[in-house]
Image (cartoon, rainbow, N blue to C red; front, side, top):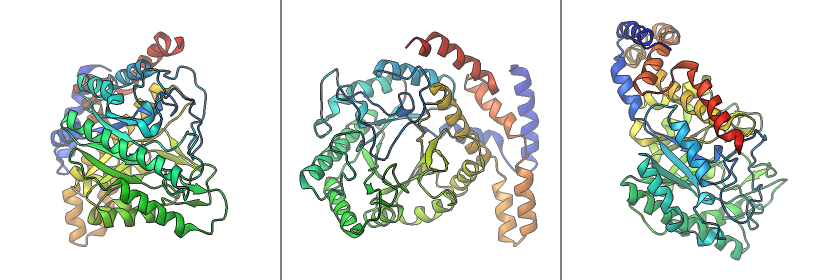
Length: 417
């Protein structure tokens, strides 16, 4: 898209937004500062780089067989680097424990160490990225239906040790990058059919978490993530939202809200203000649920738009972390990344451009007609012209121009894998 056309449209948009009391330049400055934690597992369908075969399962599944997935660390890093050339802002990379640089050696999950992620730390530093981290409970011979909530002590101890080591790795990542590494703990634990010992398994999980969190760290932050259900574990989830909300409020841990881990009729945006009152921070994993599958590529729909507005309206951006968590193997994987990241940023930009001060004044004065009218008119304000300018000033593709760049990368790189 021509630079002068983008510039001209932006100047007109600035005037239109100024008329409703919005400073567009201020909104762009804020958007530039909001990092999105990009999930590494979209590039390779959640397989990782362990020498032993990833068994899949454990309540998780990537669907599709589009050619060109990353097969090793070098290819995954190359794909991430390509993605970063197509999105504005400075972001983070979110690693799962199975993505260590194991150098062809078999390293079981209760033996992983910071050294296995040293090359990731160095690479991230060179690319001006910060790292986040995740324990990995799925795809392992000891996964089964229960990990941290397993009554079998040797199995449970294996996963406790794994998670402790993940915290140590996250601490070293945070220390290396001089910025806290956010460690997310999600387990698939549950049962497929009717369950009579719900309390027992949740009590075990509570005890496991207490043991895992016994050591305090300064350079990492703990997150606990719930899910509505796992694949083949549909009837009972040990780590439900109620469980983790209670644990997080009691122990002052960050509760992770994955937008695909709730009933499809729930309003995730409404949960933000409630959690902020009782937990120190919030971690968001943004995905798009369709029926039973929680992990479709994020698009700019009403759900993500409302979530972004609520984030901005709280004026607590410093306490809310935003990451992506989808893995679509049915389309070009680099394209999936770029659509998801840009859609999330578009939602945030729309939220930052909302005439919030005027809306709050209407609400405080009981002027509910005026509030609703302005909310409706705000939907058609020229935010897209501001978005194009954001892309232009970040030297990334404007509009649909990124499509051809991804097509060329597929022709030159991923199609040859």
